[in-house]
Image (cartoon, rainbow, N blue to C red; front, side, top):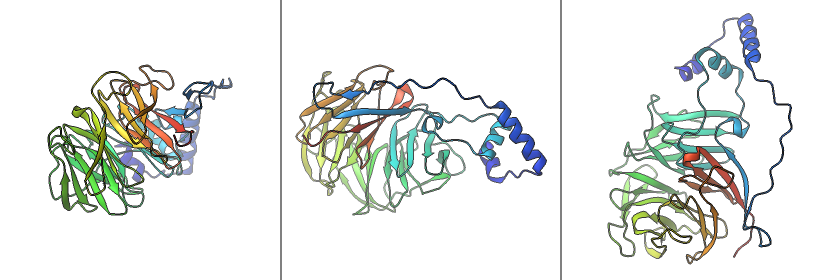
Length: 350
């Protein structure tokens, strides 16, 4: 109701506006006069080894990103109560320009933190219907964003500046959509169907083109695949979760290689979640059981591990999605710590 009011509310008089502004200002909390004490730099690996990863920040709300509310938003909050703008159970994250999107099944929508326009919105389906289980995000054409909802068995599109997500009409049903990637050059949409143990390929408009894989343990086969990433070379990186490995395909779906094994030590893949790669071709795997991010070279050799169970900076509690931007900024959905942690790769090629 509050969001609908925002779009149509008109203040009747200057007197009322002045009164409300004074009331809002009177309710504001005065800024803390104590200066922030800078925390020590957090890096991996520790000295004297060469630094590869540095911790940047974490955020759980719009305030953490420095977004402030405009006058009308503050008026609505004063009248109806402040709406929560916090992460609840973040599962995936994506950066598009100055906008950060976070898929959040706990909030039943996708948070849009627009640092350029200084705006926040929880994106839901058309008619303000909730997205029950948004788990995957991918950039589409232009600044649009694709969202998978595993509970609604659908793929949704958030157009640039849109207030809601529109369901994409797919020619073939997807039983449990999870990971997603869009090839901007070929105009192909790749959707992981976890329940069907395959990747379905569609046009940007939703026309079915082909399918990759089937259930099994062989090369190119899957056992409950989950997340997906397309690297700079156009290859598809897929977390083949219950085969405890990552598989790599070319853009046409031809198997290239695999790596990973079952176990509970560094280098193993007991509960793979998100996958991504940086500009040097390093492959990053989020593992919920190991509560961290493992970094591999293209052959599958472990290079570095970041994290461990905890609530402190650089620690995780059942993390899920990951996104790496063109400047090698790394976003990780730290699910049960209810935050996104941000890192940066500062090393060179290895």
